[in-house]
Length: 415
Image (cartoon, helix red, strand yellow):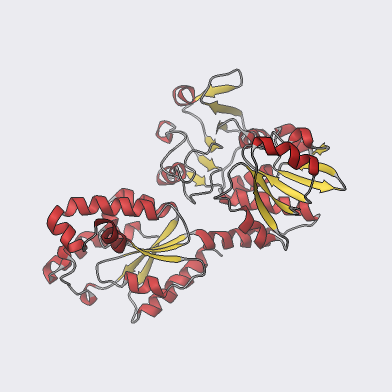
């Protein structure tokens, strides 16, 4: 018997089990079901309560004995409670998305809203937007219909939209590079909400923030809908303080720590001192050497700096797609904008601001193997290091002190 859990088609990368473990003391399972297995699962009713995710939020409705008013209006269910053999359906995504909009401080009342996608989460977004007083709500689909506009129409005829809500899987791991729409056409945009929560920052959200637009990914929505689901599961109440603490805990358990700085500034040493349960240490220079089968000095001398930088970008892109890592980068990693974007997708950047007087040239680093080269690189890069960092780590007397500073600064991020 699966007392509590989540059903869906593919749940490999779901965070739900971890979130529920922080919210309640019960066994919560991830249950992958094919379309052919749904009927048998619901006829057995061998569960106390479950969550429902893609693609079954509408499929499950005929098996339910009762729907909440919100679930009826939306036409999609993501939470089911078994009470003495009777199945009660709810839509807690509604409350999660509402909490997400509030966290992002995005005002929907009186605004023109574009909702990308047509699935169950899209229906949730539409009802929520209407409840929050949107002046006009348009659903965007790849196919034109009576109820949907196309993406081309959205760009050409509705570029004055105030809010965009993405409910498609575009940008979701492992397809992190994709974007559901190009926001550069929307000059009136005031807010972006993305239901995707893995990676922690999609390209859509990142580009919106760069333009100064309020934007949030879907992790907070995922946690807050789970809070309401647990309340339904156990007939209890969970305070906002507890809910926010759970969100902070999930973020802390997922978000990468990225270390940048000059060659010889101690990134690898400090990184290995950051002992965090469940995290692995990755040195991008070591990964490059594994792939090319030689030392970086040999690689640059034989194939040139551009070849090395291209391989470095490839490595950074690969290692940054997943969380729970401490990533030590090469000294020049910050020189390419795409590297910074990759690293910030699932992480925060900590710059080790080591004083130039403490840096020593070494023969293993051909781009900084003399004092003159080192000073030149320092002067060229220092502003880039500082401008791309989320946190600047001041030079301290020991690597242990710098590691402690990072851990304390990180705690402050999640308070």
